[in-house]
Amino acid sequence: MGAGLEKALLRAWTSRGALACALLPVSLLYRGLVALRSSLYRWGVKKAQRLPVPVVVVGNAIAGGAGKTPTVLALVAHWQAQGWQVGVVSRGYGGSSTQCQEVLPDSAPDLVGDEPLLLRRKTQAPVFVGRDRHAAASALLARHPTTQLIVCDDGLQHYGLYRDLEVCVFDARGVGNGWLLPAGPLREPWPRKALPAIGQQDARLLVLKTGPSAVAGWQAQRALADHALNAQGQAIPLHTLRAQGAAPLLAVAGIAQPEAFFAMLRAAGMPIAQTRALPDHYDFDSFSRSIDGGYQLICTEKDAVKLWQSVPGALAVPLLQTLPADFYAHLDQCLQSLAPPLSSPHGHKTS
Figure 1: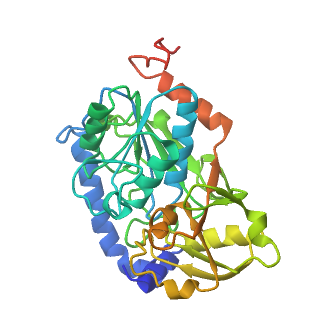
Figure 2: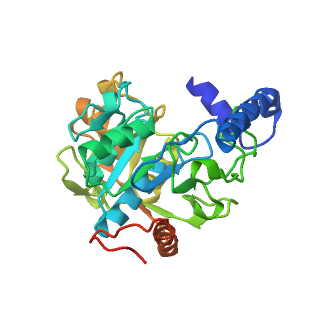
């Protein structure tokens, strides 16, 4: 999708204006296809495939990034702190691989995707990518048989994978104009209907908001870290980049909403001389080194896994996402209520 068309659609999705109305017939056709597909699972014509361990799917009801990957990072860290062996599966969007495969710390981002590689490096958990999430998760369990819990990064609409819990993430856009693609941002109708045939229950759909919106749900807090990371993993305090005499900053972002990242940098007092907004999952292969002459490049961690290959001197500022304590409590309670009861990391049944 061209940058101009993408911006036009993003604007159109905020209201029911002329462009959105013009696209409404296509949207209604899409809605019918979505309803038919979900009904095939509801009626048992299609079957979701179970795994021998619980599955938590983190996804979006709207197109574009809303904070899924930071949410996955927070959830994995939460369960790892409790002693759980957690694995992650992902579609691997942005990667060229068509096969199910494991993501290693030195995997090529253009092969496995930038987000899966970031998840692997940040969590140290096993990560597998594949179009078929069940196949990817099965391969993960075969390679790492002590895994006790699978988190699926994206895949809310991937009904072929049975899930025990769903976490739907919204940002400040909420549901936009309330219409489905392409007349609006929704991938499926909202509020979401429970689909018992694929393991979805109303009580087990958790809604998380990463920005202010009218959607009911738990509110996460997002902030930049007080440091940046270099390609060697060393922390560089942000105040050193604000110091007098420091090189002017050129901020680049190849994410769904680059302006949000730039705004956070400015709010943190970073002296941004220039910004460069790039398409989501930008590969940086065609990134011109000439534009960074005299500037210190600063970017997101997602961009850095690719940018460091060509610009090793770039710095990445981590995004910290804090989830409410009562959200974690409800999440854990939902997991403990599964039948049969889950075994705790220490081999005892949870109560």
